[in-house]
Length: 251
Ligand code: OAD
Image (cartoon, rainbow, N blue to C red; front, side, top):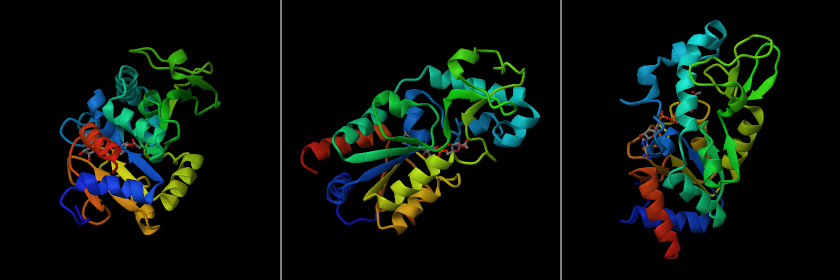
């Protein structure tokens, strides 16, 4: 915690109220309590699947069926998950006019399912599949089934509309995210290790543009010491619950 005062939750609530126009940047950690594993760390996806073999555009172009071993797990885990209290808390903060947008690196659609309206999907989503040869698009629901690899009418293996390593960030999402970062009063960074570029630049852009940075994460990250103003160390659902309580008391 780098802002004065002995109660970081109260300090964070005060920042949100005083500075207005808060934006949230979320990562896999916010969906852990919905049963979706994060990427790094002991139980993370990248402990099971080497991202260089399973999560690059190059790997997909070379061996799409192998990459679908990992993608199938993601589709079925995300498909069976429901928003948790943290997703719902962020949606409530948008409803209250405290948070104006959510930039998410997640592809699980849980912010929208919780009721958030302004969601910028920085790494795409799992809803859609596209053919990288003939550019035809399908919904995942219409083409994917457990244990099978989804195929295009042209016979090629379909790619989900998610950003793999080596894929560009969807240009509109990148523009919108940077604009939100440049103009927000507070950036609330939730559940990301901030190790993947260019998403990890968003907190720095916000900070350099004058925003306060509040981080919600049980662990320290590369942001915690140099970029974060207030680090609320705990699970996303618990910290957001305490923040909401504080805000309802008047911040
Ligand atoms: P990571 O797995 O790198 O980091 C998850 C973060 O969530 C860690 O810092 C944890 O400490 C934190 N965390 C765990 N449980 C939490 C909880 N209950 N509440 C709050 N925080 C919690 O996931 P990301 O930073 O999202 O990209 O990963 C970024 C990108 O790397 C992903 O979008 C994906 C991946 O490779 C691509 O595949 C392109």
